[in-house]
Image (cartoon, rainbow, N blue to C red):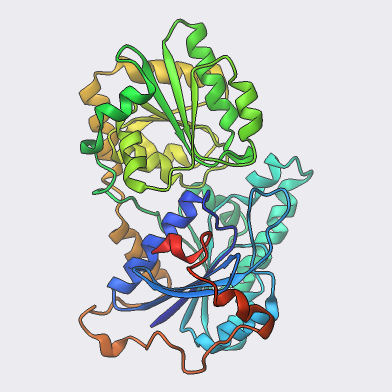
Amino acid sequence: MRIVRLANFVTVHTGGLRTALRQLGRGYQAAGHEAVLVIPGRRFSDKMTKQGRVITLPSAPLPRTGGYRVLAGRRELVKLLDSLEPDRIEVSDRTTLRWTGNWARQRGVRSMMVSHESLAGLLGVWGMPKRDALADRFNRRTAEAFDTIVCTTSFAAAEFRRLDVPNLVEVPLGVDLKLFHPSKMDVAVRSRYARPDELLMVYCSRLSAAKRPELAVDTVASLRNGKVPAVLVMAGDGTRRTALAYRAARLPVRFAGHISDRSAVAALLASADVALSPGPVETFGLAALEAMACGTPVVVNEQSALPEVVGGGGIAAAGTAEAFSDAVSRLMERPRVERRGAAREQAEQYGWPKAVAGFLQAHEAVPEPATAPALIRPAVPSRPYLPSPRRTAPAREAGADEAGAARYA
């Protein structure tokens, strides 16, 4: 079965979405299906990777979004989809790509929309009036356009459930329990950021308004005001970095930037005492789950979906610096072995094989043995897709798109 996946807003900074796309693609391939991912980027490319075929279509960056791009050329995308002849489509953008649900229905192709965010929550972050009514209207149209709506937590599903959407399913995402492991703890990494007598906290996410990174900075200030020798590493980048640097000017906060090496991310998370996830509209929180898999407990915003994910592996707190600093202190009062063991145990409930099986079930795609290649269609479609003439030149340039396919290999 050929599963074509479409995703927008994919950049080097979108760690959670990028990880989910990569792991699901690998899982589909391992189950005997053919996975094709279509994303926007700087230039055209078409690569075979471990997660299947990755096609990057040239797209201009959206202003003031930190480098986000979208698949804006509808005619070009229709041409590509028609040439791919998918059996299923899986869409990870509920705004600009909603029209693809109707495309699929017209061609008898089953479609699935994956809701990676709370629309009402995002509208609230942006200060939109009447956000619930606006979200309800938009979500109802989305549910009508697709055969299946997938949400990764009850929190994310709530805005669809209140509309009595009949085609809603919940499928949790997963975590790489081998890569993110307590054994990744590195004394050298820890000493790079903190002295032995200091409390090392880590924030690992995009530096954007929706993630509320300023709350992590303010938590350090609150702890230090209480005479707790806390330091913070902020691993990530985004539009809020300059403002955060000013905010943290007199605090022990280190900006590590985006860390592309996943092993290095695991080492940092495993070497920290506590991870912070302050975003109020997180619908799953892969970074928090990865921290727990490393044995590092997390403090999360009680307004988000994370309380149902972290369980006993952390503490949910109100979205204030005082509440977060109090939660950090309470975590550190627990014996080290107990708090780290509880974090790892909670993470072990989530694995990518289980998540992949859930997504395939939502697709109504029965896993097929990976040893039966005859069941897999050739990677080259029967009706080859060729980019329009004005876009062929970039395709001949050396290398894959740095903001696209190469990062999924």
